[in-house]
Image 1 (cartoon, one colour):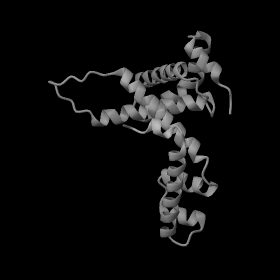
Image 2 (cartoon, one colour):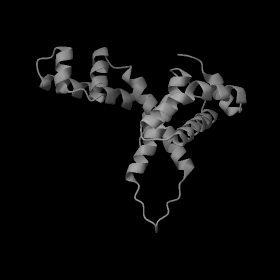
Image 3 (cartoon, one colour):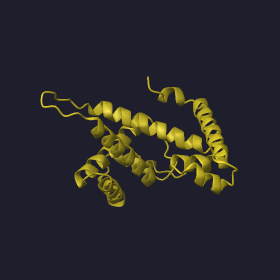
Length: 187
């Protein structure tokens, strides 16, 4: 775990020198990700700016600790925000007679909630057995049961399915036991 609170404090205090360094060191990765996933330079700029603002607002409200590097955390926030934008654009219906007003505060609150859920998930994933971690990482990466059967030397795909089921349940139980869970479920 690193102490990257100086980045968060710089965002809160509008420290131009540190913010410029954050852009210099991190924006290119975000631009590459966004542009590789149906976005443009302007989209990447918007997402990066929203992510920095989200981090500053959240840090001002609750002094959270980043458990990975600041760069990795910022990139994850940007990826989640961009995926959210893509999902919103999928479900938009365009009609000339209807104009939808955009509520940035609501979007920001949902993005923060999403980020907190991701943090709870990744932290909880570390609490389950090493075997379950490996199985679920492959499962979430959409690895076939046949490939998993070979990798773990199981007798059949049914055994893999049962193992995935047990590991998912173990993860769920750990998540539900966490004190943050009740605050993060959607109402």
